[in-house]
Image (spheres, rainbow over the protein chains, first blue to last red):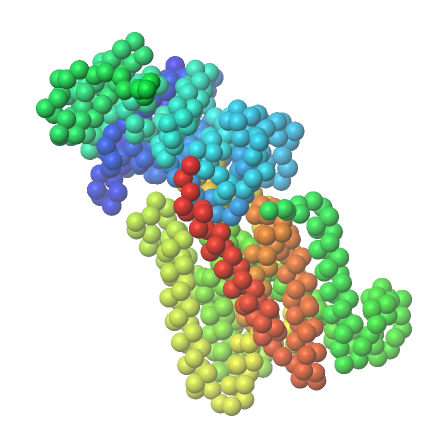
Length: 279
Length: 345
């Protein structure tokens, strides 16, 4: 079932087009990776889908089970936030809110202004923190956390919104190897539990490994979209990113290895694993 | 950092405010002991002169201090939240300059003898500035995702503050000696010689404004994550800013119209309360209102007793306390920001 339908979406910034005529369907429980070079319009595209930016042409439809499709741009922000959660790439929190206070903000769209949080709201907040393993520092100030911990806090906040669609802008940026894998596995798990996820991801290896489909943005256009395995070829990557890569595959998936110009002599060379010597 | 978030904090702040009220009515050239004050207030005394002094002179003055301190502090808390900047205050968009120019013009045109003319002039001056800021904010936002963005608003406010200060300076320069004294006195701000009729409008504005701001205090929390994130959480940042700036302007302009531009209260009190009760605006705004009211009553009591029988402008006292405290906080927040910018995993 299609949950998000993007039709011919066009956005121009001071009459300079950022992206043009993008059409895309995203199904329930699908993890779609949005990839593309810097400045290809990934962030703007995500913001347009989330309704934050008014687009110049085209439409985004939100199609939830048991409801007729609705135009995102016509939804009241609070109503939209009950079905669609989004985390921006770099969230700077002013003032030292605690982790629990930040996660509790995820209940904002679900609760009435005049009512305090219900027991159910509190339970959902605690569950979201458990899920992201941030309960141990629930009382700590968000300002004291590392990038990886902060990313988990914002993900927990988004989960507390109980969304059907989750938009993430570079969820693994600034994270070390371990956290990159942890966050991607969590996102994969959420998608497997029928959450629809669209994530802008810089790292092609992570995108190829975890996403159901990748959408390649290039100069404001959708250059290609499909399952990573036939899609991400050495030729496509070279034409979009302008860099030579080796794309290898095994049972686990694709291995995309960028090559510096000095590597080119060895382009067809054999690869072998590098391990610490036993001596 | 340990935070005092329970009901006890509010009980303490409430007791401090009641204590400040009692001190405010008790202290003066004719001392009225707190017990006696309490009796008069409760209608249990026929203290004659003391009763008249308390009810006609001190009580309106103390209540004015309460209202102005309350309004400026809660407005300051909201401005800091709206602009995501702990150094913002109620006068950020130029309300003080507009009100000063309005008051100076009223005095220079000799309209100030008319009842209510001086507060009305100040009130209109403040609104004129904010009206222009709104108009500019709606159009000049190129380079930002959202209209009504903070940079346009603040820069417009700074420019207008300069413009209206020039107007005030012009009136000061051309004023005759008696007008000159009046203008300068107004500019310094003070709670002297309040009249009951001035209090009533302020009471209703403070009550209404406080109610609205508290209802929207959770939306302010979402705004602390930045405007795009607030939008993702279902809060429309532009609508919130427009609505709350209107309420803050109404409250601040009303306070300034009656008491002049009293500085530092709206900056220091919310900042200090954030250190005590934390940044959650649902607690912060309440705490700021209570603490600000108590603070201004005590400052005013000090202002009228320090050099008695002469009266210092209360702005001198608030600044005398406020400026060093502000420098301390600034130094502290700068140090706190160093690890925040440098840490990545």
